[in-house]
Image 1 (tube, rainbow, N blue to C red):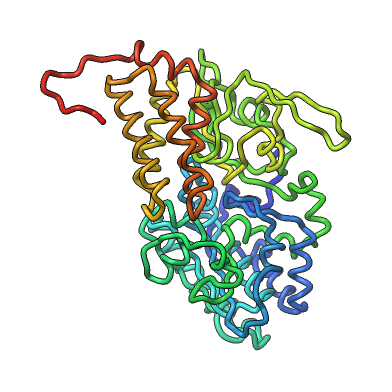
Image 2: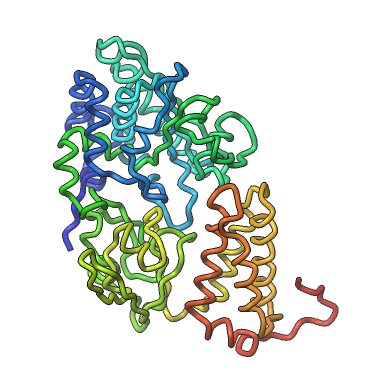
Amino acid sequence: MQQRRIIFKHIDEPGYTNDLACYQRNGGYDVLRKAVARPPAELIDEVKKSGVRGRGGAGFPAGVKWNLVDRKSGKPIYLVVNADESEPGTFKDRYIIHQDPHQLIEGTMITCFANNVKQAYIYIRGEMPEGARILERAIAEARAANLVGPNILGTGYSCEIYVHRGAGAYICGEETGLIESLEGKRANPRIKPPYFPAVLGLYQCPTIVNNVETICHVKHIIDMGGEAFAKIGTPNNTGTRIYCVSGHVQRPGYYEFECGKITLGQLLNDVCGGPRPGRAFKAVIPGGSSSKILRFGETFTLKNKDGSTRTLAVEDIPMDFDTLAACGTMGGSGGVIVMDDTVNMVEALANINAFYAHESCGQCTPCREGSLWMKRITARMVHGAARAEDAALLKNVADQIPGRTICAMGEACAWPTQSYVEKFPEDFGNYYETKKTPRPAGAPQLV
């Protein structure tokens, strides 16, 4: 499969650097120069026509999100670029920031001009200190070239960009938790309604929150036009997507393809070289660790638009938002995590449960207590104290969480447990017999 690189067009080119001079030699900021000469409403319309969906996880159409912004209140409008990238298995935004930061800055400035934003923030994950330094330097270069700051390109339009470093909390990937953190508070997600960012966001003002990859697409949408962009990919899944493949494949890495034009099997076998020698694929997480897992060998019967049905094996699933959702999982952040037949799913789930129990903000009881109990159960299992009823107990706890929390963290911590127990009953059903190890005399009881 041939990659269709738009965002990553120059990233791996020999001699391509992340400084302003190199970026401008390759046409950098030409789109911004053209954009500021157009009416802002036209730019918003182009993004709507493009159909581009958010690349941070939820897949919500970016143009629709922009259109929801309250422009009548008289309050300032803010843009927050979500560079927190906290979803395990996802590393695309970091590569954009490290290797092509001016692409992000140009997309940010076009988005700001289109929405009359005078102040933008790039919220970057705390574990990415080098990325923060690169962004600060790139913004300074752009400011010196009159591409950021006062009277941009002599148009009378002014806008500043600030880099804000987070403290490394997963919950800050959720847009309202991120806003709370940006305001200097504990990152507890807000209740929606009434706190929809488009109306009551940063400092209780209308706010647009978009992912790094989404903002980079804005530049290319304005350059080629929304209708031309919409022809890339598949209907309702337009443009390209960056897939971050990690785990048990021969060639892990980041790959950019037209959305929906590559199947999961093509990505893992043709692009990533297939499983390790002597191994076979067992499972794959298609959109970051919070998405439901898929088991190799299972099939899905889906309805076509004409009412007919089709049956897909895991390898045949097109990598787009809608088909993955129809198969009971999600495209999410594009983090594809592969597991081969050396993996025991109880142990894999124990690792994931430990992560989500640690990252829960604790605001909602079902998530705070449920994630902790799932962690305790799987920790007990892998430490030699598994019981025959553990699979049913895990599912019972997980089933009480989704739909009962303020933000989607409830689903994020419950979906792995639900899907692992459902898809791999033999790993859980036999674990108490096959992995039982004697407890040392006098050892404390594992809860």
